[in-house]
Image 1 (cartoon, rainbow, N blue to C red):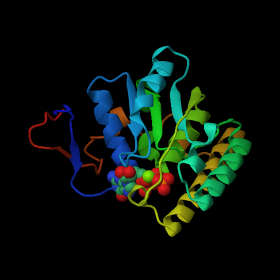
Image 2: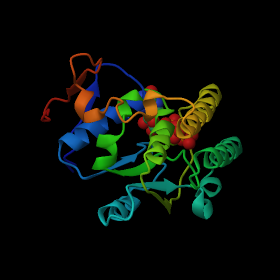
Image 3: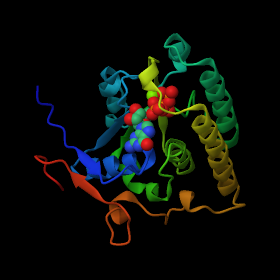
Length: 223
Ligand SMILES: Nc1nc2c(ncn2[C@@H]2O[C@H](COP(=O)(O)OP(=O)(O)OP(=O)(O)O)[C@@H](O)[C@H]2O)c(=O)[nH]1
Ligand SMILES: [Mg+2]
């Protein structure tokens, strides 16, 4: 069966965050109004895509997260206890410091309106896993409406590539991002991550100064 996918390939692995920057940029360029990110490791069900997208299409939310915490999907699906405890601790910290009330900030299943992805300064974000956290902190800082739906998950050996050391690095990255968001909100510090003049996907991604090099797989149209 042909899925009609358009595939873009970086000349090397620039990391998890840079991958999202390219995918979002190309999705917007191809005319999408709603863009859904789902980790390709079979842990999330794409059957919720229409539900999440409709919450945006009907104008109720700008961003929708598939939450593994609401409905108890995380532990039921086999999330390791240390990841679950870290998720709950980081989420409580983030809710306290950002003022948002989300059930989790670490899901790999997210839907965004085009406007959100085009207007956030996403090129100021990390190329690594903490990208996921920075983008949500930016959504909160810029007052986008974030909704959640409960989402089951499945854990199995091949579904987790982050080892303990990288998880710890991610955790510290989350704490730092959250504190930056708070300091910027209080007007105590200014970060490019939260600057309305920060570099944006559609304006700056393929500028001559940008280090991005993306090619399209043979047989697919390159925009
Ligand atoms: N482009 C790119 N993608 C990556 C890289 N590392 C991981 N990914 C993708 O990111 C997805 C999520 O990585 P996981 O290791 O599952 O991390 P996680 O979902 O935060 O952790 P778990 O909850 O344990 O699954 C994977 O499905 C990969 O497709 C990377 O270095 N480059
Ligand atoms: Mg995974």
